[in-house]
Length: 132
Image (cartoon, rainbow, N blue to C red; front, side, top):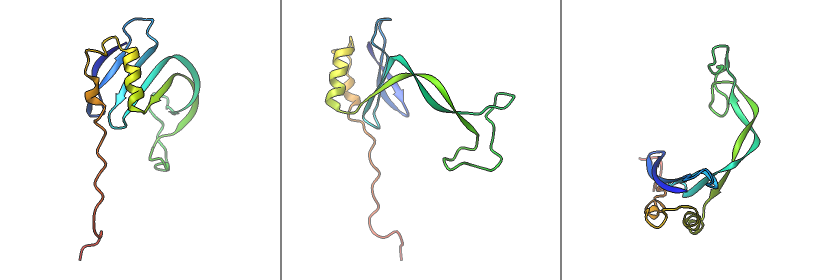
C-alpha cells in the first residue's frame, strides 16, 4: 500500500491506496477530527442498509407528512446489500504500527503530521446564559 495526501471533510490527511492487486486492503483513510484510521477490506459481507425509495423518475420519494424524527424528508426502505468489511483503529500507537507494516513509503512520507490534528472541542460558556 502507498501513503498519499488526501482531504477528508475540510482537512488535509493521508490515505493508503493499493500499490498492487495483491494489496491486503482496498483503502484506508485517516479521519483527523476523530483520530481514527478507517480501513476498508477486500472481503465483502451482506448487511442491511437504509436506502431512499425512488419514484418512477428515479428521484427520492418525498414524504407527504413532513420530516421524520431523524430529519429526513424522503421515504426509505431497508435493503440487503454487499458491503466491504470496515475496520476502525483509534489508538495512535496501533495506527502508527499498521502504517509501518502496510505502507511501502512509510519511512519517507511524513504521516505523523496529521495524527495530532483532532478537532478542538468548543469552549464551554462561562457564567449565566441570561445577562442582566
